[in-house]
Amino acid sequence: MSQSLFGVFGNNGSGDGSKDDNSLNLTFGSSKTPQLLITSRSPSMFSSAIKTDALALSDHTPIIKFRNAVSRNLTVDSSDHLTGDGTILAQSPVIFMKNGEWGPMLQECLIQGSPIESFQIKRIATLDKEIRQLQVTEYINCFITKYEQIGDEISFAFAYHQMTDAIAKFLPDGTKKGSSAYQFNYGTFHNDNDGAAKSIIDS
Image (tube, rainbow, N blue to C red; front, side):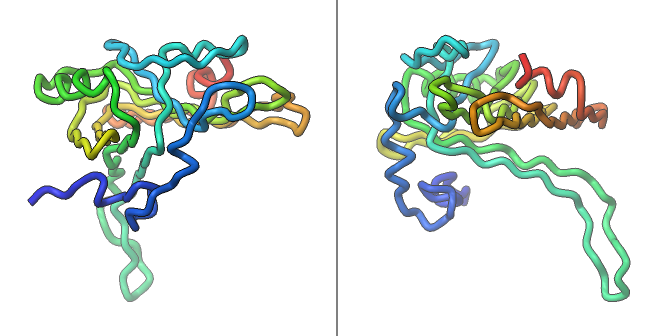
């Protein structure tokens, strides 16, 4: 029997199924900014009424939360030696969000096996009265692997070929002081912690 995405992670990512009211009451404007947004490219599925001069977010949609995990196949035996083949394993990220016009599009991509060029998850905040990107996680060459709806919420999981994770550093006054990033391609096993990796949050 397949396991529910909602049952695995609950409604607040803790696995206890409790409801995180703060994450569900997202509003747009200066008083409260959505913490997490998603956007996609080829096809473009998402949209919102978020308005900001600093960032182009009209093709983004707020999400409740997402889960991402990567592991390496290694264990320690009784003689304190590492065993295992060291394979890097990327678990399918899971997105939790309100349903919308993107729901049927996600299901179509799942059933048809259609690739999605990229997903981006952005963590944003209002700093010095401007919406700024704190973190951008990008997944390239994606395929939907599971879709589920409960009430007016959906969750979906996807496999991907390459991931980039970038985090910006800001001073208390909102001035950006640099960024750190890491990119890994599971097809070529090429990694990058500069250049192209940082460009997704520095642009």
